[in-house]
Image 1 (spheres, rainbow, N blue to C red):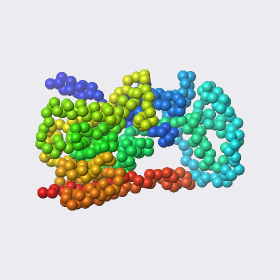
Image 2 (cartoon, rainbow, N blue to C red):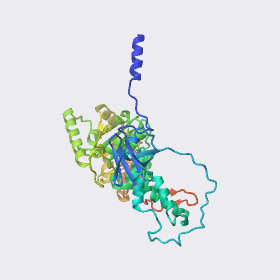
Image 3 (cartoon, one colour):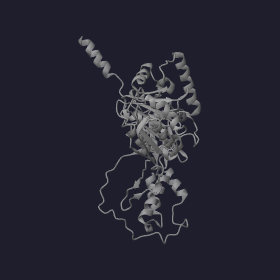
Image 4 (cartoon, helix red, strand yellow):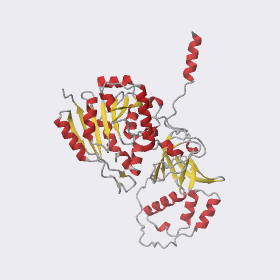
Length: 445
């Protein structure tokens, strides 16, 4: 008996543990912030993955094992340029943050004669192995007008030269907020112009909490599905439903680096299967899965497939990473077929909440089919880019006495620049974030 206990203890110790989410491991997805938001790139780390900055390619291998939030800078060595991690340095607090305004730029003339250092001399410094900071210091020392510039102009000059001669890459962890912000900045139409505050409002209005069974109509690439699964944390279920035989692509879920425990809680099932007691044979299930996979591969290539390509166009994806040297480790695919037992349970008890984000569909045509799948007193939240479709849906719900506490909310977000002596709203900000219709489902019988 003691031997069996020891064997059981050894087997538990030998079980593979999930990687630490605070560190970037090989095969995980990362969000690379190049030059403080100038470029946002999604990538999957491996020994052969590279990032193109300017005209040069840099290996992402130094990022493997680094904690998220690490800052990397381009440096030159014997074997060429490479990414090197910048360790944080403790800076002393400056008591005087008042900007010296005794200088201005009125006397400066932009005639391209202020810099004594030529391009050939800069290239010679690079060949000798000079770092980007050393080149910037040389540019400042050989500038005739730098000392005469206003302090803010000096900072802008340093930032401009840093982006050119010493580009920096911030290693960020992909999660609901960072993924939503990255897509909203570069390709907002792919997520239905869903801003991060609207996404937060959806999760709040739908009361997504642990051990909830959330029904999702996700036509924004899987962003809503991933955000719900992230909040559930491996408890409850998130069921992505759809009309017809082929579900919408949720490939964006792969960027969240979910563990197998969370992936198993992401399932899919059609509205017809959830609304009727009819069971589908295994042959029909396999046929439907083949149709779904074909639709996903044809309509929208997965992130991992794009990563493996040798060339990517600017319109293809946010990702522009290639990996010719080593095989990319693919993330597990989410959205398996819901089991028969789970479908029967939801048919009997209903879902605890509903979130809809379908910018290409009429909200009412979907809501009238999916609302009966909820349990009584279950909250729901419907997102749409425009107001009129939600107003029509709200009117029909009131006329049919299908829901109470109906309200349409327009989220509003303003970002501020917070710097010494110059705190103000951003000069460029988004003035529109869509609309959210929320309410509570009631029984019509």
